[in-house]
Image (tube, rainbow, N blue to C red; front, top):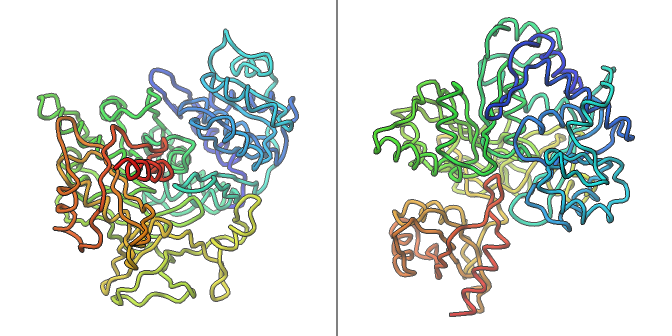
Length: 540
């Protein structure tokens, strides 16, 4: 559908004006309230010079204001961009310079960082602070005051506008994936209408008919996105639920609390939860097990789907969750650049294996030359999927050419995820190519070793990295956090991995830390892990 996503949301909102669109703890917004407040915020931003194709940074925690801000920016045909709320001054400056941001909506907790950054960002025309109404700096406008004082922006004719999503990844600087709303619409529908078995609407009229068929007096979906909205998974599952005629529920706390998630699912009647792999799922399984053991199990009888994208989701963790909820565990291999590439769904009573999927329709496993990898050959290739012609990396032609390739007269996205294809068509996911450790000429996939370590009863979290080694080129180092009251030695870790994987995949060193450093979306901070591994080696 070649419509602005703002127009799509307005279409849904007009049909569901009195239904709740979003809740955050005790606070709620109906569709009418959401649309009205977004229009007033858009009016304020327009008065500050924001217009079509202006870039507006959103540096907020999960909550209603995040959704209102993105909606307001879209109404103006401007381009919202996601900012990691953990970023410090230099990271903020680098990101906003790269995006050419003209405005920012930020949380009061981040005011000091933006005070430090704004002198290096002369293009910023508007800064709006959410929260802290008694302590708004003179260089910013108060969010609620801006909404109450501004005239609402009128609805306008729009087209297939620009969409920008920054992906932090695990290495290197964030890259801005620049696409259009027509691409966004397809991604969003995959997280909503298609999950409900509905076809992809091609026009606004078809969308209206679909919503009427699903029922305008009910919620077709109640979705709880657990990841941060600054992460593509959180944003796209939010949009997916809303577009499907559903309601979105955000967790009240700013840090992930699995007990809070379970209690919210029970209280709000949530039927769909989105997570990011084991980082979210394993603590949730622990919390559900503990609550059951204590005689106060959570009621998850209404839960129908748990969706994970972006990080490995172990088979044993899926099975533990399915003991407590008769749901579908939908595990996707996808990226901010495109996809999905592969998918597996697991239901109660079904067997499953970690990192084994089925290719998504249209996706492929290819070699470096772009040829399909023969099934059953054992050859490790690259996951690829067809992609729109207009998608690219913001301001980075070299990276665009490397990731978005012309193969056989068609454009493909090849982000570097490595996989092999079994004779029966099963895809075995090996992880991102940048995470291959070359030790003594043998290539070891770090994520494979991590998954084995995570099955050890003492290991709570694990990262595996390569560290420089004068003899082997690189040596495998495991950085782990342990469960309370447990211990693990280097020899025990090596033996445990060696019993399950080839000898050359055993970690040569083990570094135990209190907590592993990850992004709010669960992605490993590999730079930190490598520095920890190097420091530990220097002290031994």
